[in-house]
Amino acid sequence: MAIVQLYAAARAAAGTSRVEIDGENLGSVVENLKSKYPNLGRVLLQSTYLLNGTSCTELTTSLVSSDQIDVMPRFAGG
Image 1 (tube, one colour):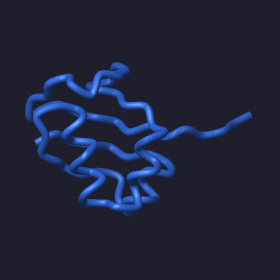
Image 2 (image 1 turned 90 degrees about the vertical axis):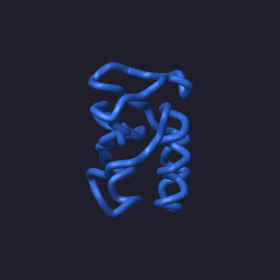
Image 3 (image 1 turned 60 degrees about the vertical axis):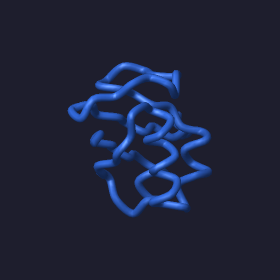
Image 4 (image 1 turned 135 degrees about the horizontal axis):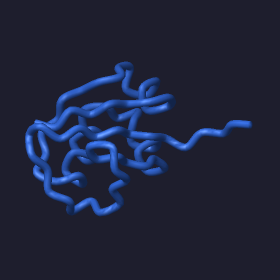
């Protein structure tokens, strides 16, 4: 089970900042998040993922139970 930290719009869409989700790879975690939190789907499409603090773009990246995934939605700033 991966630990997923949700920030900004992702946190607002899910109604929580931290969840534990099953998944053998990043893609399955993303799909399980969409299933559990339907309002999160659109935000996930435009998010960046960090796996243990490092940017991860490959949804096929395998996970172990101690992995932490940070979901970083797009945001504007000045």
